[in-house]
Picture 1 (cartoon, rainbow over the protein chains, first blue to last red):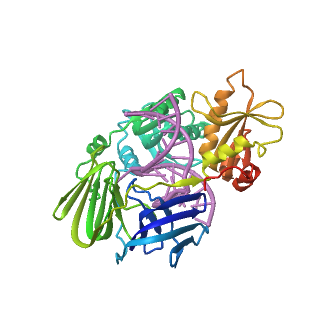
Picture 2: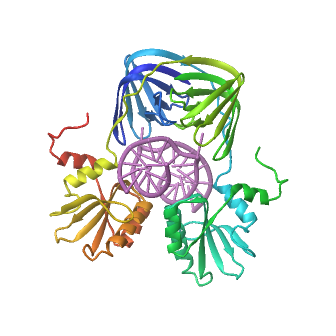
Picture 3: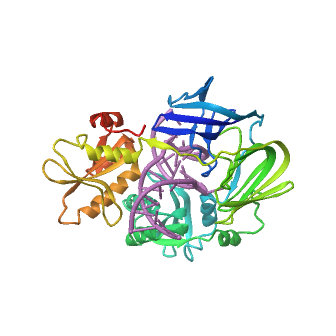
Length: 221
Length: 221
DNA sequence: TGGTGCATTTCGATA
DNA sequence: TATCGAAGTGCACCA
């Protein structure tokens, strides 16, 4: 990892063209060849960058970063170097995550109570021609219900479930198949669209669901 | 901008929980309060981060970064500081872009030739109840055509145009309205879905389109 | 201020 | 390798 603070000008040519006027910025060069241009504001996204693999040619005042894959180029014109240091970091052990959509699906598969009483799980990742449905259940009447699970329920999730339902209802062994759109939060527009199509919306409470499962179960950390 | 290289352990609690084991990493603290944890690999995305505004409390070996909005927390346990420097960068003049979707829309509005001969533009951002259609045109027969423009044509863009067309065709003053899905590149699945629904696909060439417009027009840079 | 759509999205899983 | 969906997405635009 090399960290450079420099007054510089940057031009990117690739999927688009972009230009950064002369100003002081931080240049981060990672061991894998990534190149990042950061300013002192904004969030985690750099002003400009190049994804690895890429080659860096330093020609006095002009640094040229070229993507080995796409040929995209980043030309950095250096006016003045204010800081320059290199550091050995080694390979990072990596990030452990907990709490994403997969966990919601696991929890709901383990206990379908949030959907309704007396329901049974047919299977998780129920296969269709256009991809797997998150959960396939039977309700207390034995009728099939396809469940689409999202962390945040938005309009595209409703579209996705609609496509599944259209396909599933063509199968005489399954039809009629109802739909449930389940999420930790559902946007009003998504709810309107879903209910207009006869899809029921269920808001999931992650903490409640986790609490309902045996407390002694092992956790990630 | 403060740059710290340190052996550290990081725990994030917020929309999810995440943990980073002890290892050397780069900590970037921006003037606006952003906090980034970078390793020596991956592309521009940090391992962990906090978006501004947030407060940073340094308590000897434990740094706590708290989001002022959401209350999300990042706890950084410092084992050893390998580098620590601060730099005045000032406010960045910002990025100038050329070649994104808005430009494609401008170019196609200025010259509809890529769609067909003898076409006229009704208006850009043609309003509907569920959002604006990129372009509304009339073809050489005077028939209305709704055009959805994407840089990359994928399945959700076809869904979007389908929703517009359904709505537009309910309006007796407009109907029948045809659809065109225009993009710099169209994925096979998106093309199949579009054509199955009677939507024509047009692949746009950005350089050609820019060349077709008066060369003397002022450019960004 | 909240909703929607774009992004040089990036990233991961899967066929 | 392509495709598809998720992301602590971020961000700009618009109501």
